[in-house]
Amino acid sequence: FWAVAERFDMDVRVHFSDERPRLAILASKASHCLEDLLNRWRAGELPAEVALVASNHPDHRALAEFSGVPFHHLPVGDGPDGAARQEAAMIELLEREQVERVVLARYMRILSPTFVERFPSRIINIHHSFLPAFVGAQPYRQAHERGVKVIGATAHYVTAELDEGPIIDQDVARVSHRDSVAELARKGRDLEVAVLARAVRADLEHRVLPFGNRTVVFH
Image 1 (tube, rainbow, N blue to C red):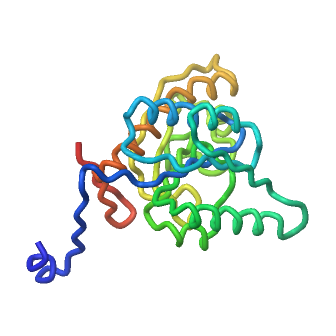
Image 2: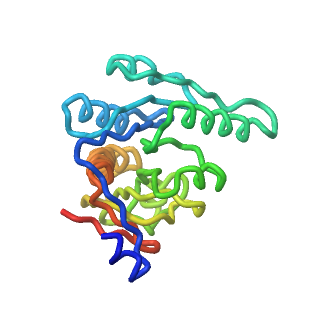
Image 3: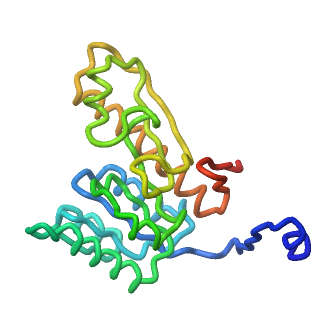
């Protein structure tokens, strides 16, 4: 391997099937993606050690502790530097716990370039739209205002550019003009949990090859 890699200036990595990376799940108020990942992990579907659940809200403590996972509440403080101090505390926590993978399970905080650089191609986010459509906040409302006929969910690696990272998995569902914003969100939750779970599992099984701003996913 190494001789070929050197000849063609290739990056070669070897992974063993019994490796279980330390995983952190970050979530805000919505619980559906977090709950689904914890259920799949307890069922043995995700080859990882879930090291912790962290949130900027206290809501998920019982859910995490039911699964035997430590919960950390890191609220965003007051003042102009509140967000920066919260993020610094999050980085310190993840590094202290030797976290190797970070999953944003509807974690509604924008990560700074400093955060992203600490975990290159190791942070997976679920965005509740079919990217590149409807980036940023409230994509279901954006979709409703445009009268879309399908909604989607996208799991991608996080980069410094908001919702612009390499896409790992996507899916869509048909919707109707009769659907309200709340109904779009309800239908979208099923997509979000399935897409995120597939992406996380593919990443943990080393089946995702980032290539520029794209990925190759081996099945």
